[in-house]
Image 1: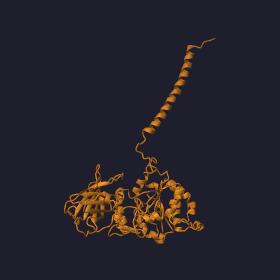
Image 2: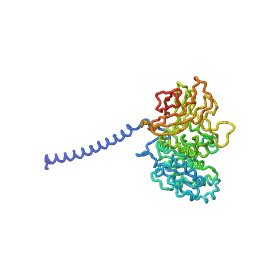
Image 3: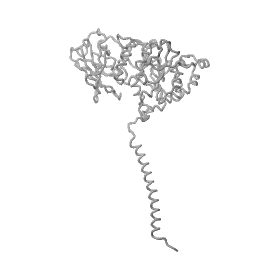
Image 4: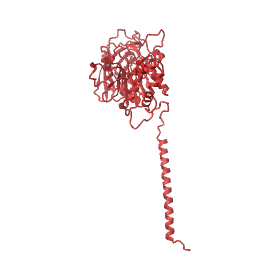
Length: 478
């Protein structure tokens, strides 16, 4: 028998070694890859990520912006002749997406259609459905059906659907910032409750009121649109579009999440007290300006709206945000509602007291015999020199000498015809007629804590300056 040569044995051994070496090397590389992948998951998870049911989660590689928001505004042709002025203060042509749904075709005097208004559509005729179901409120059915009509349009890349009225006023930058914190791929139904407690009782405490804006994530809005005919057939006995919408969303598994920055304004009369003590959350919407007094003295409703929106264009994040500080030498308290008003009180008052609005307004639909009347606490509108503020309203706004600041000037509304407050030495503020407020040009990214401020004033001067800043550690506003 012939024995294999040394060379042939060496070649076979080398071949076997190469096979085993390559196989083991592949295993090592594969195993290392798995280890690195798992490490990247566990080591780079943010430990501060919230775990609530409405947790903020990364939604895609690109952040939410205005192009992801689709608006559906519901109105009447008759009212649009004057209400369009409200919408045109915030609608951004070629940037804002959506439609105005009118009950009938526009009158010739509305044509050619304004380029500053949303494009319009005439609502679909659903008379047959209304008659078949004997719906008790055909107009309400038409409004709810508008959700389907909006979804039926082409909306590539849409993430959020916002339904509103033809007099809803939205603050777009704040709306984008708030919605950008939520995952648009999940079912979300946001809205604002009525300020009038009985409106919530009559309809539901768990619904959004349409004038404040009803906000749905796109998957939820699409599901509701697909279920629309069935929805309207199930609830022909409901006489509120907002209630029908909420009921059908709940049937789909969604739940109402209130947003405090959405305001239905179910109030009457002078709402300056409400606007001067706005909640710390970003202002997202206002409504019913036809039902309240003009919010700025010596201006009509449309002029007032434009004046407020001018301030909002400088800084959406601070509009109506309440900042409180004290001038202890004079025993004064300043309460600034940025872009709107300033109150001076002739005594030191804590923030815990001033965040409650002065009840300058009245109830939406008759005053009940006994409180509560509203969904928030209020302060009585009294004729007391220590409790009644000197009131100043925004006069002008623009850039300051410091390019990193915005300067807003506020002027006195009327002279307060009261004696000085006797508490703390009696230091009347009647002679002050102009206040300049300096705020950072950089918008506030976080609203976890309010801002603080410093007052610059020389006794006897008719002017005062207020400089907004971040609060110091453990600083008390009292």
